[in-house]
Image (cartoon, rainbow, N blue to C red; front, side, top):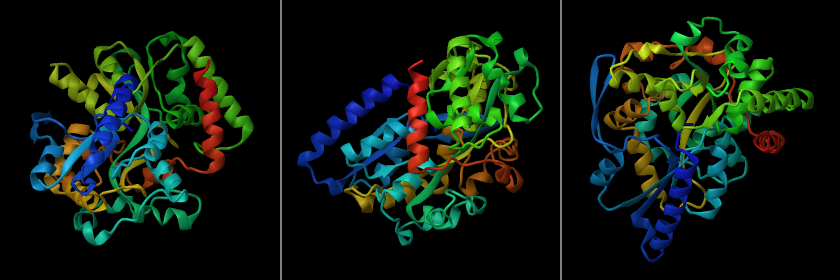
Length: 382
């Protein structure tokens, strides 16, 4: 979820390849290789202000290196689960942070190692119990395995970010009402769409009243044609992280957004002396909830350091820095007590049990993965 532009991602992929090649003559037990979404970890020292509260953030990778000076760290980023997926065969990463449906896919393909929870006391102590009863897969046996292979890092919902001054306040959570703006030709060249298969197809399916995991040919065809028509007539701006500044500047009037990106956009407005409430976020019924998780690939070469890193990410001060910097919802119960109530009480950011039950997680199966990929490639070709 999250995330860098394609050009930057390509540069970083090339960079990490060079770095890993250069590690060929080194003892890999002294190097930790991390592959994460862009802009998804605190990598700077600064003071962030949220609703009048100041928070000091630092580069948590440097903090880890200070705590564990025996390790070098190679850190690179991607901007989409589907772009990360083929890279884990080409390179040996010790930590990856895919979304839930991709975690399920990797478990089914035997491409992840089980976590040793005896080495992750912070995870056991601090993980939010509201994430304990999530259905990750229709197969209960598969669903129950997920937390054996993955530790929650951040989570979010998918909704509409919009400019209140231009669209007015939206209050109807009916998906057909929320998402109609994405397909309205009045907003030609001013709609933002994620360059992400599941989010884009999912929004179209939710708008049409279908499941985010449907494999019904007629329903998927309708969603495909809707997105093709949108590209031709509405001409949305497609991107990931680069969309945030376009919302803040007013270049974009509305678009699909992860809830955490809305938080970041409001921070940017406040930092610029503007009204953060200018950008609003509304969560449609039946939309997506997504959990990104820290995992250890099957071909990882430094499993010991990987466990230390996951546990370190659950240190209360580290988890707070990441939550403040990233803007996404934290699975860390201590963080919830330190963030402003305006954020933690927002049901779109930290959904209650009733809201969670109304949302869908993306599922992964051979049929879903192949079918949705073919549809996405067709959409991109138009």
